[in-house]
Length: 241
Ligand code: SAM
Image (cartoon, rainbow, N blue to C red; front, top):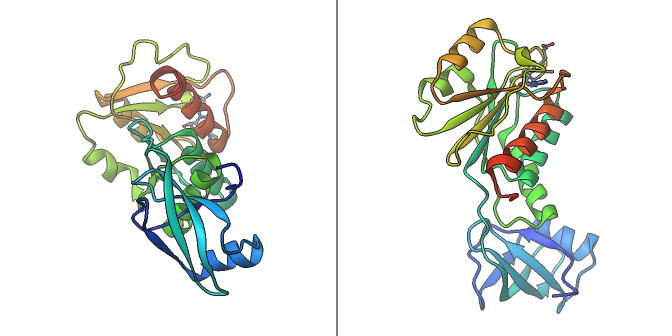
């Protein structure tokens, strides 16, 4: 619908004819900040049912009602790709989560490693960043942000059928690609600013699921590396083709 410029994530089932209640924060955004009134159109998605056109049926100061009209997009699932990364400074961690959601990661897992700079992350805030990124980029799916966990513990229960693109700064400049890799369940692993320890590197290289990858001849910051790795993976094995 041409006049529906705002996209909103809602935690409510979406189907033509449904009424969706608007909570206090959403009412403030829609009716006070964006000044939408009764009859205005917006787009809704919930990460499950796809995207729908909706019309404002009631616009109060603290609440409202949206009437769901036609479906505008089906649910578009991203590839089955996890992004594991060691949190860095807050703004850069937020950036990684935002870009992972935009670029099509299905699940985002913060992990602590030997040299992790920061192990304090607010899962709820990171999840909100992923949701806002999906609102902005036209996605109909919001990647789940997992609770932070120790890398070692995650590797202890690593699924046998999930391959891992291990971005290893020690292989900087090596000519490694995903050219012979096969599609399927994957994960990307990005280390902290301090890099991986020798023990971590040894363990990762010993795993049969691991494909070590160099991201070129320069050492990238962790947030740059996350975007570069997502690009390389999407181009070779993801939904960009
Ligand atoms: N302190 C490390 C060093 O000086 O070698 C650099 C760590 S780097 C800032 C953060 C993470 O980004 C690394 O652990 C790795 O996962 C990824 N990374 C950065 N540049 C890379 C490259 N050229 N090849 C592979 N991974 C890279």
